[in-house]
Image 1: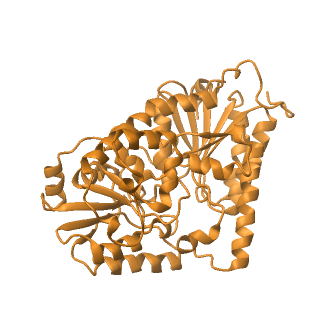
Image 2 (image 1 turned 90 degrees about the vertical axis):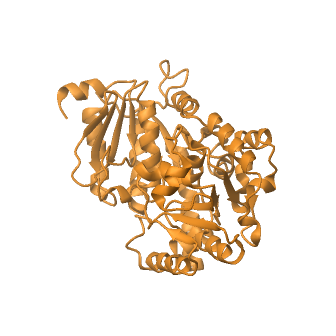
Image 3 (image 1 turned 135 degrees about the vertical axis):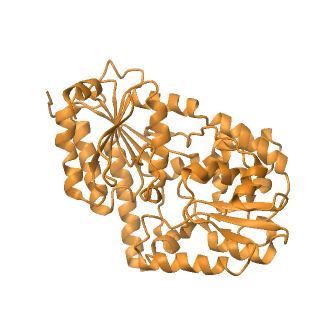
Length: 430
């Protein structure tokens, strides 16, 4: 990094972000390795950079070097996933290049940095940042307190190991609260869970920001995908994971769905788990299930450029999740494209978020109109479609990127930011 760039971004008004960030504007073999956090960070940080400077210390992907996304957004490829030494080297890099920056933001889920040791190391790094007088904002994309509920996803079956990891999770959340000035989650239910371990006044509920998606004509979208223009199309979207209930949905579809319908399974392997033997076995079992019914179409991974086409072609997005541990990216996408969406009862606590309930009432929908049980024929219905469109449209407006960006700004730079130091510095950095 040259001196001019360093001087441009090394200021008190800059936000320093440590997270995953995808290759910008590149459609390559690496695109399938983009994770949900990377997808979220790209759109959110580009929006934030409209009003202030942002530096992203991101994971190294392929051969991409440091890049200016725009005049206010610098992405530096600074660490390798699972490499504790590269994460440790972030500290001297920050001190040399961005000593004047006062706000450090981490967008986190448990697989982003590559395992237990890197996750602990990140907290140690943030603790040092606080001791140096920096403001730390930590965004938790997942809040799970019982590993047992994720057996199908992570295959930890031993009760002893489950108890060990549950204890570790609770301790980790407590440490997150200790090293952070503010903690961000994406639904009220997740805040409620986290408040057992972190003071409630530190936890802030934002939303996965919604950006209006490119509109594609439904007839043209279906023609491109080879789908009949009149057949009702249900869609499951996103990486195929154990906790998402995809196997349950497919089995229910085969037994109970209307004959004149299609189930579009638009997603491929989870890039984090593609080398795990147990996960490969699970994924292959899904593929075998799909083969049992010719009405089910499996697309594999969907490129960003094709997402508008799939959401235009679908009549309804289904989220048959078995576990509520994070805000759903596909749900946010459905709002972006005003696509009707229905969720499993396991996600029923989405209703704890006030904007969700307000949108439901404005659309004239009941709880049962939006949430379905994972058993029986209620999953595949074709009712209240107009009302569901209204629901998506209203909630999309409430969760617009403009509104969410303002919420981030208030967390990064609260009213007293320029008058006080967020945490008394014990280490002096010049």
